[in-house]
Image (tube, rainbow, N blue to C red; front, top):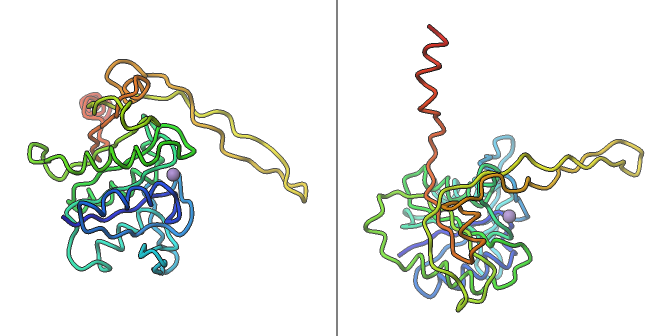
Length: 245
Ligand code: MN
């Protein structure tokens, strides 16, 4: 099995190193990741400048672009042949509910999915890298499972509690929860007196009920949500047609 690995925290992040180490034992791996932290990059492509690929001493490739750039470049010309699977992460913090729309970790996996390749995004629930080796073992367990009964390509969003491997709850199928709107922006001044703004923290959970990713991880379980890309609000099509008539 050939696996392409990317992330949004950058090629030097402990999460991608742990993931690469865990998967190198069971597959041929290639790492192509951003040269710096591009968390929150979502599905952005860099169209206003050329991108360069460099190789680090540990064999990882790094790109002066976004997570989506990395996977796009890898799949459309950089790699010989298609990987069997693309994995992203392990992210430094959760990507649950509305986070998935902003996440560069999920975006890297989504880019592969759009090219017809099965993909999995991995995130740890809490940032700070505690128990990242346990998370990498969970990621390897998931990759080692047989995917035959899953329709391919699939796009899975996995959130892993920061627990020792032995205390990790079971793999649990979930739906995305929802958050309240983000915390207010933080206003300040730069050293030259100009007004500046820092984007605030994500909102608290609004829908964290049974069946959600928030709920499963709060119980110490590993949350796996199957994602799709079509954003069409099918239930609203009829009322839209009525409004237009
Ligand atoms: Mn990140």
